[in-house]
Image 1 (cartoon, rainbow, N blue to C red):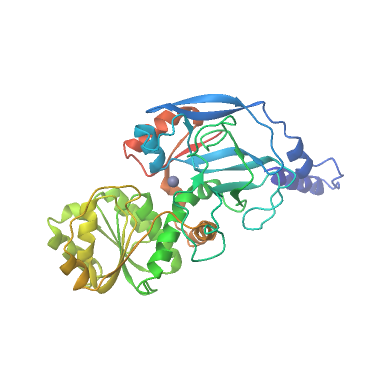
Image 2 (tube, protein in one colour):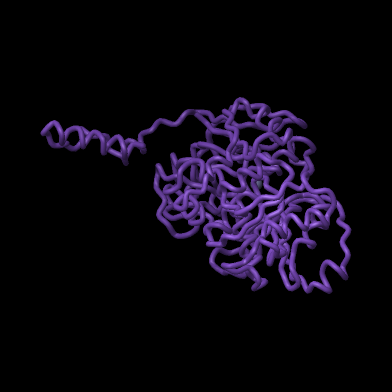
Length: 403
Ligand SMILES: [Zn+2]
């Protein structure tokens, strides 16, 4: 922002025939450095089931390895909704929000680079990923390292005397030892979508390990919530053209087509699995799918999806982020006799997370309407309403956006 103002001021001065003198135009560096910080920060604290209190806490000292970030926005995740409703992780009181992004306003003297080695400066836009514990297997640049599932992240930490631990706030203190990425080249909506998109970059990487997912594959994506829709976008960005979306809601199927699906099948229009399989086959011009992505949390949907896949095809199951119960399949017909290769996918690796920044640029470049995934934006003081909207399953991605 300051940069733009500076450029505009210079431009105006040049047009007026004058030359900008030092100190006339807004100086980016000093303007950022002297931005006065408030004494307190607002933090949405989940204090009881179904209720956040927006509390004020003093902005703490920024240590030599720490980064203070002014929060611009944060997506509401299914995990937040579970915490809000039932506190399954026994975290209350907790500062939630892990899909957040904002601008660096203060940093310790030891901080010069982000986790990928990119320079970090005041004014840069950043996101965080997991917080390093002493686990050498979770590293940045080895493709085969494990996913970050179970690792600590801001927004799912027990409360402490700093309190600025979640992204549903107006300031967050990112402490030394956390992963932080400079994503100044992405717009706010894209930055809010990084975390959910990383889940799909990882799922597609898992799918590729089967050797079945190829440029010319016929691919079924079952479930057109945010995860399924982003799945289609990732496949489309990879160049895969033949994608059939399956869901029970016409509005979501229409969006799936905007996102790049070549055809859509509404399961409510087809009674019974045989009729539904027939519809999927028709949508591929008389063929079953080479590969399928299962993006719903429904055990019945898991059981159904095998029918859509050809002999020798592949399946990536990524819908069950949490335990959704048991599914009944027929191992003979569904897996053995068809020789189907299945992979599971859960969260992402740090490498996938960083790859997602490029995915979002690619998706934008080919005109995919990623911003439309964010259907509701609420200010921080309406966080309870935001979570209620999420629980009602209205819209797609709900986000808190600070003014
Ligand atoms: Zn999430």
